[in-house]
Structure formats: C-alpha cells, structure tokens
Image 1 (spheres, rainbow, N blue to C red):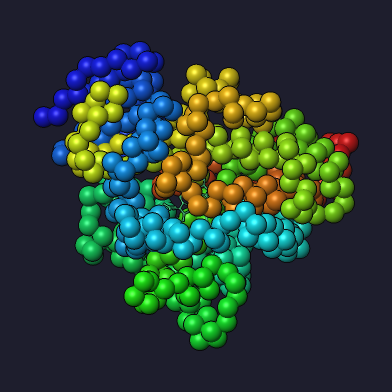
Image 2: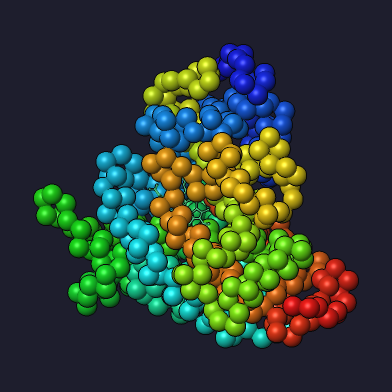
Amino acid sequence: MWRATRKKFPAGPSEVLKRWSFGPLNNNPLEYFTTIAREYGDIAGLRILNFKTIFINHPDLIEEVLVTNARLYSKGRVLRANRHVFGEGLLTSEGDFWLRQRRLTQPAFHRARIASYAATMVEYAQRMMDGWRSGEERDAHGEMLRLTLQIVGKTLFDADVERDAQEVGKSLELLLEIGANFRRTIFVPHWLPTPANLRVKREVARIEKIIYRIIGERRASGRDAGDLLSMLLAAQDEDGSRMTDKQLRDETITLFLAGHETTASTLSWTWWLLAQNPAAEAKLHAELDAVLGDRPPTLDDLPKLVYTGHVITESLRLYPAAWGLARLAVEDHEIAGYPVTKGMGVTMAQWVVHRDPRWYDAPEEFRPERWENDLLKRLPRFAYFPFSGGPRQCIGNTFALMEATLILATIARKFRLRLVANHPVVPLASITLRPRHGVRVVLEARQQKQAANFLTGEQSAVAD
Ligand code: HEM
C-alpha cells in the first residue's frame, strides 16, 4: 500500500494519505477537489486500486510541475483515454512528434496572424445576430458553440462550416457528456462495444466525415489559402514525406474541438454571470457605448476595451473552461518532499486555485474590477492559469482572448441576454467546464431602452 510521508509545506501541515473514491469524483469533481484542498491543504496523495495521484493546490508547486520539471511528465489519464478521438493531435501527442507539430502549427497563432482574424470574428458574430429578434428565447450556449465553431473553421481552415455547425455541435455535446464520466473514460477500454463507446464511435465518425471532406476539398483544389490547413498540407519531413490524411485529421479535429468549445463555454458563463450582476453589466455597456458608439468593434479598439477584457478575465477565473489538468510522472522524483514514482498521476485544478481566498478577496464573487491595477502581475504566476503554462500551454490563448472579447463587445453592444427563470444552469465538469443544460436566455435589444428584471419579471425603463 502506498503511503505518503508526512511533510510540511509552507501553507501548513498539508499532506495526507486518502483513499480515492471515484463516486464523488464522478458525481461532482469540482466539489470533490475543493473539499480535498480545504481538508488537506496544498498537497494530498490519493489512490484507488492501483491508481495513485497527487493533488496539488499551491501555485509554486503547479509551476514546478508545468514549467520547471515539465520534462518529468506526460499528459494525464483522461486525455490519454481520449486518444481515439484526438489521435496524435497537439493536445494528446508527446515528445519529438508533439514538438515538431507544435512548431509547424505555431505560425498560425502568431500575434500578427491572429490580428487578421479579428474582422472574421466580428463579422460572424454580427451575422449570427442578424437572425436574432428581441423577445426571442434561445440557448446562449448553443449559439456560442455554433459561432465559435464557424470562426475556427473559417480562420484556421478557410472552410465555411455553417451548414455543418449544428451537426458537429451536437456530436461534440454528446462526446463531452459521455467524457464527463471519468470512471468509464479511464477504466472501460474504448474498443469494448458498450452503448457509450458505440455512441462515441458514431459521433467521432460524424465529425470525421466533415473533416475529411474539408481536407479532401483542399487537396483537390491545390489552393494555398495561406491558412493553417495549407501550412500543414505543405509541411514536409526531412525525408520529404508529407502529413497523411490521418495526421491531418488528428490536428484538425483537435483544433476544432479545443478551439471552439472552450471559448464558447467561456462566453456562455460570461452571459450568465453578467445577467446576475447588473452593476457589472451596466459598466460594460457604458464602456462599449463610450468606445464604440454605434459601430462594431475592430482590432484597434481592444486596448480601449479594458473593462470588457476584465469581464472575460474574471469569467475565466470563476468558470475556467479547462477546470483541471492532469499529468503522469515518467520518472521517479519528488514534489515538495513527496515521493512520486513513475506512472503516478499529478492533478491540479484551476477551479480550486482560482477560488482560493489566499489569492482573491471574496473569491466566489464576480468582480471584474478586481483585475484593475495589474492584479495579474501581483499574483503568483500560477494563481491564475486558465490556459495552463510551460511548454504545453494553450497554443490558442491569444486567439481565444481576442475572440471572446470581440464577440462579447459585438453582442453586448446590441443585446442584453436575460436569464429564463427556473432554467437550471449547472456546471458539467467534463474535459471542459460547460453548462450542462445550456443557458436559456431571452434576447433583449438594447436600443429599446427597456430592461426586464429577470427575478421579478417586471419591465422597467432604464437609462442605457
Ligand atoms: C477560453 C478558451 C480556451 C481555454 C480556457 C483553453 C485552455 C487550454 C489549456 C488549459 C490547455 C493545456 C491543456 C494541458 O496542458 O493539458 C490548452 C491546450 C491547447 N489548446 Fe486551448 N484553450 C482555449 C482556447 C483554445 C483555442 C481558441 C484554440 C485553437 C484555436 C486552442 C487550442 C489548443 C491546443 C491545440 C492545445 C494543445 C497545445 C499543446 O499541447 O501543444 N485552445 N488549452
């Protein structure tokens, strides 16, 4: 039986040997990890059967794992178990293969290149709103999913996926719902013909069909669209060989999935938070009116949309789309005196660290203004890490922040999203943190200068 030796860590006596039960982990992982941190402090050893993992909850330890000693780890069990979905794409591949692919992909995410995507992001958001009518009820999460999928499709693959968006969105939703069962993900081999596995297979096949069509169309046309897909198609190994359709499929499916659901969820949580915090919403509107007046935002407006940016930063703190990270040790070593043996897991949860009162006043409250006066610079580096850090940090972080800010500005300039009473908005901690039943809202055109009090249902005139 594995025993951790009793050690002290700066935050106090904080180690423990705990039997890791999959029940609460499966049912409510957010609460489970929060409780572990509250009861055991910054480092705790957990085990179930032969699986051992160390849960760490201090920014300095997290930095040690993700940055300083990154070479001692590979990706964790949940991502590994999803290889049949992501293949050897950037998110799941390892070692030299990963490095080569990361270098190939990186230019598509350089700041200057991303800047050229800004107009597409705003244009697609406007196009979506063309179909919106004031007073109409919609699922904000479904809307955000379709929008961000179209944006990733257009910017990285120059493909208009509007007609596919609904299908891919639905398949993805099912995949993430199934993926939320960690016990099944880790313990049931994906090739077993269980009902859940058969569903996963069907949904992956559906997404693949679309992706292979996009790849096939581009190969056939031989067109250099100057986008990521063209770069990947043109890339050659030292021996002159090019990427196979399977490799292209893996990178494409990874970027489609990693690059749209995360930003969509961030925006969905943002609408939900804003609808419950009228003061923050009013401040956001005031900034948008002052900076933009009656025109949509452009890239050049971003430095002036300071509060809008803080709204996104705060939303990513409270509802980080990547709510937890896991690694596997590839060598024996120690963390803060804990023996870590090869094959042991290390888990970190943004959900927990981002709500730690040591780093944030009133951590459960939505307060975009907390980011004023450079809070980020005053925090320990890994007290806020929605995009992870170190070599495996999110390649799309600048893309995502720009996209979320521009979409928020474009939509909030025109519409308020009022929550539909009694619709449950519940976090589902799958690979990403998403609203389990969506976020049902009533659209309210802002120029009407009317606001419905979503709690009482009363209509009242507002000075917009
Ligand atoms: C708010 C939005 C986003 C969040 C919160 C987010 C978060 C993350 C995190 C935490 C990781 C690291 C995972 C780990 O270390 O295990 C990651 C990796 C990754 N993300 Fe994002 N992401 C977002 C948007 C995007 C976008 C827009 C794209 C692409 C268009 C993208 C593509 C990727 C890829 C390819 C990786 C793997 C990188 C590698 O290992 O080399 N992400 N993301």
